Length: 172
Length: 134
Image 1 (cartoon, chains in turn yellow, red):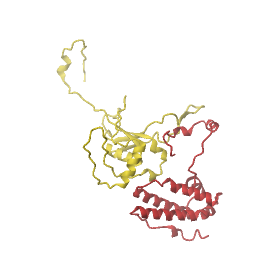
Image 2: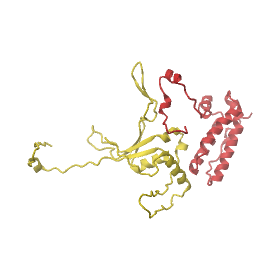
Image 3: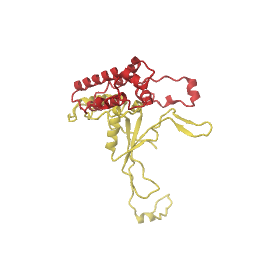
Image 4: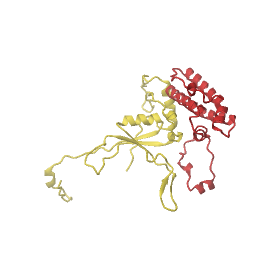
């Protein structure tokens, strides 16, 4: 499964993001975007948004600013027939490469020193999740949900002739 | 030392600074109060620290937030620090909370290989590589 990484904000990297946020605190929220009529290889910066730097106030460890989070829509619960909570968007933390996990040599219990590995935050919309991640200074990426295509059912298609292909009896 | 006389003497009405200059003035004022309260803090909690060391640790708290430019964040930080000051000076805290949270040194000591080996895990491995600040 390939993760579809889409960076919605131009300031995805840590250093750039920090720069964006410091700028955003100095600008007024209603500042108009600067649109340059130049060749397409020139990156036009998005208008600076007024994002509160909540991470300095929250008391969270500053290491979290260097973690990347995934914003995604969880799949439907296969044990239930209804699509409940399917419209929610979720944030969870990427697994740290290189350790923080160990096995108990005696009992074989799996342990981890990563205190964010079980944490997930639920949101009503993608924009809410992005806003929250920006406020916390997290390096985020958005994983878009796969578009489900349900083909229309056609009874006559069961009896169509197809060369080199066995006929499938669809019972449902 | 009249620590336990009137606990509300350190209470302040919640103020919101509108300009950066005003916030800076309030931060300086708050730092001065922390600075002057260091000997009293040592006496109240029977700390085995020198006032200079306590002031150094308190200074680290202020220096850690020096880069903050968001006025809303500064206001919240000032409010929280002010509440913290009142709680500390009125002995509303336990010694463990003062030593382990308020005065915990910011700089972490590097563990040797053998220390990690005896612990059975490498806690520094969870620290991301890009975090030069922490």
